[in-house]
Amino acid sequence: MKELDTVVLRRAMPEFGLVEGDVGAIVHVHAPDGFEVEFVTGEGTTLAVATLGAEDLRPIDAQELLHVRTVA
Image (cartoon, rainbow, N blue to C red; front, side, top):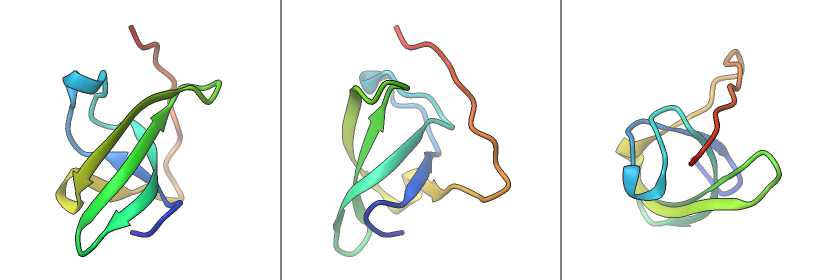
Protein backbone atom coordinates (compact mmCIF):
# COMPACT_ATOMS: atom_id res chain seq x y z
CA MET A 1 0.00 0.00 0.00
CA LYS A 2 1.24 3.46 -0.83
CA GLU A 3 0.28 7.12 -0.44
CA LEU A 4 -3.09 8.08 -1.93
CA ASP A 5 -4.28 4.46 -2.09
CA THR A 6 -7.89 3.86 -1.09
CA VAL A 7 -8.05 1.37 1.77
CA VAL A 8 -10.63 -0.46 3.86
CA LEU A 9 -10.54 -0.56 7.66
CA ARG A 10 -10.37 -4.14 9.00
CA ARG A 11 -11.56 -3.35 12.55
CA ALA A 12 -13.82 -0.94 14.38
CA MET A 13 -12.25 2.13 15.98
CA PRO A 14 -15.04 3.57 18.15
CA GLU A 15 -12.74 6.27 19.54
CA PHE A 16 -12.80 7.79 16.03
CA GLY A 17 -16.39 6.84 15.17
CA LEU A 18 -15.15 4.30 12.61
CA VAL A 19 -16.49 0.81 11.94
CA GLU A 20 -15.02 -2.15 10.12
CA GLY A 21 -15.38 -1.62 6.38
CA ASP A 22 -15.05 2.18 6.43
CA VAL A 23 -13.05 3.53 3.50
CA GLY A 24 -10.11 5.91 3.84
CA ALA A 25 -7.11 7.20 1.93
CA ILE A 26 -3.46 6.79 2.87
CA VAL A 27 -1.99 10.27 3.28
CA HIS A 28 1.45 9.24 4.58
CA VAL A 29 3.47 6.03 4.82
CA HIS A 30 5.61 5.41 7.91
CA ALA A 31 8.27 2.78 7.12
CA PRO A 32 7.88 -0.10 7.00
CA ASP A 33 4.24 -0.93 7.86
CA GLY A 34 2.68 2.19 9.35
CA PHE A 35 0.13 4.33 7.56
CA GLU A 36 -1.51 7.68 8.25
CA VAL A 37 -5.06 7.27 6.94
CA GLU A 38 -7.71 9.96 6.51
CA PHE A 39 -11.40 9.11 6.71
CA VAL A 40 -13.82 11.72 5.36
CA THR A 41 -17.57 12.27 5.12
CA GLY A 42 -19.37 12.37 1.78
CA GLU A 43 -18.87 16.15 1.64
CA GLY A 44 -15.13 15.83 2.29
CA THR A 45 -15.05 16.84 5.95
CA THR A 46 -12.33 14.95 7.81
CA LEU A 47 -13.85 12.59 10.35
CA ALA A 48 -10.56 11.07 11.53
CA VAL A 49 -6.87 10.80 10.76
CA ALA A 50 -5.37 7.69 12.34
CA THR A 51 -1.97 6.02 12.34
CA LEU A 52 -2.59 2.38 11.56
CA GLY A 53 -0.61 -0.77 10.90
CA ALA A 54 -0.81 -2.94 7.81
CA GLU A 55 -2.87 -5.45 9.82
CA ASP A 56 -5.59 -2.79 10.29
CA LEU A 57 -6.06 -2.11 6.57
CA ARG A 58 -6.50 -3.76 3.23
CA PRO A 59 -6.56 -2.37 -0.28
CA ILE A 60 -10.01 -1.84 -1.73
CA ASP A 61 -10.86 -4.36 -4.42
CA ALA A 62 -11.90 -3.16 -7.88
CA GLN A 63 -15.07 -5.28 -7.62
CA GLU A 64 -16.24 -3.80 -4.29
CA LEU A 65 -19.15 -1.38 -4.12
CA LEU A 66 -18.98 1.54 -1.67
CA HIS A 67 -21.81 1.89 0.87
CA VAL A 68 -22.99 4.97 2.75
CA ARG A 69 -23.77 5.24 6.47
CA THR A 70 -24.60 8.15 8.78
CA VAL A 71 -22.12 9.10 11.50
CA ALA A 72 -23.19 10.46 14.87
